[in-house]
Image (cartoon, rainbow, N blue to C red; front, side):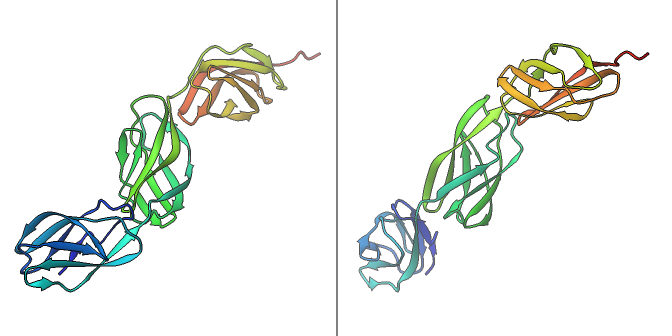
Length: 247
């Protein structure tokens, strides 16, 4: 006589189906010493909603003919999430994040705001999941649903692809060292700034402004590339390295 599922939340509320023979007219389903609510009954099955509980309990069905042999049901506590990495990504979704915590082995879904995705269980302490597309740019709550319940408490930020405007100034010496203000949009999560492929030190001033210091470069116009967690934007030929005078 199997029971499915054979595990559920310590808070109760799990609908289980017990199958067997001579089950018609069931008068009681017990999880340990607690009575469950019977919601369906046929000669070969009983459907019931589990009461609250802890640990492993014996489940029995009572009919006019007596009480069945016991089946094991395992109570599982709600999951605990501790970290989410990375914590942001493009609004289109598609990147993979890792969630760590406790009690994650029975995870069936991860919700990012109102959108859900099916995770890959690595271990009881680790999940990976491909982020679904977001409705709009901004932060959303992340919840994990397991057989033990649903856990909230983490957030993920959807970020749009950045755009770049005209830098100020637009030129400087080949020796580098020029502080360049780069205007644009969605620059808060800037991860790198390059001039002609060479990384430059930078500071994020606001979501619409980044200041970078040019590295040394060869004379001529070069591309500026700003990379954020939402993607990369290129200002083609936006900065010109000017060679110093020679005599």
